[in-house]
Length: 268
Length: 125
Image 1 (tube, rainbow over the protein chains, first blue to last red):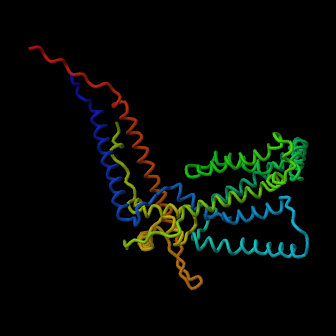
Image 2 (image 1 turned 90 degrees about the vertical axis):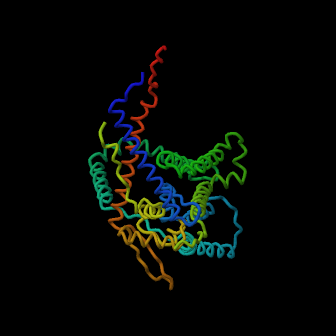
Image 3 (image 1 turned 30 degrees about the horizontal axis):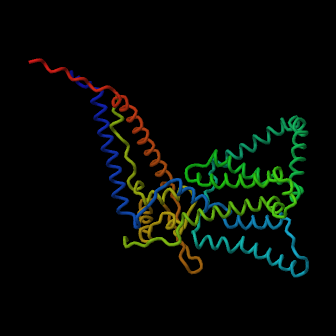
């Protein structure tokens, strides 16, 4: 026998129909508005993309500057054999000048011209207050518990720092663990905080971690690898190469997200 | 069932339009942005972006600042205080709609899965 629907079901159905109509109305409005507003075929209102690219451009360190810093670090750290002489010293000085000019002038100018300018968000009064209170709380904690904590942690910290110092003090002959820890921290950070669009960088971070891991572990499989010049260069200049890769990646993202030419339509 | 499901909050239509929404999202994640950046990130034409910015300025949501740098006009746009609160309200409204839709879906799921009502057998003639 066909049961008569109870009043609750009828209400729900009526509310559902109302909801459907409203949602349909919103979709229809979006479609009409998009058709009126866009000049080109697509206008992706992808919040993550918009926020990410804006954040990327508003950071103080532009991608190319990071890559430049990486190059500087690589040239300083890697055991490259430079010929000696006054001409080389002069070229080195000129190179430093070029680095400085590129860092302070050329790259920011190129970014302004190519991508435009974005000012980063300033710290709000609330955030500032929280930070200030946090610092005060930290200072008070340190004043009360600093001495016992130092007494307890000093032997542990000194042995750890000793190990780190050994690992990084002579990078051309020992395995350099700095790039490995750097990539690992970046990967963990991306897993914890980054979302949708930043998922792309997960591939880069995994690849980078794998690369530095294989450089670090190569002497375990091939004991003779430590004597190879290329291994010494890659091992010592790992951090510089890391900065170069990350800087170039950020730059490529900006280039892809912000096209050089935007289609002009006669829609004014 | 309460009547609240039948009354949906409506989003601000000035903000809801995709081009303007994109502009406001960009501006809400920085202190200010110039015209070149806004044009590139929203992929709008100069004229269209200009019209949208004028609309937003007219509604008091953004502040447009023009200055001359190297004999060229540089237009910088930032969110006004009203713009900040309006976009926050917009997201709140959208969240409410989303939550309401989720509630509605949850309510309707058991009905959809419920067995169909049986028809009584035809009386024998």
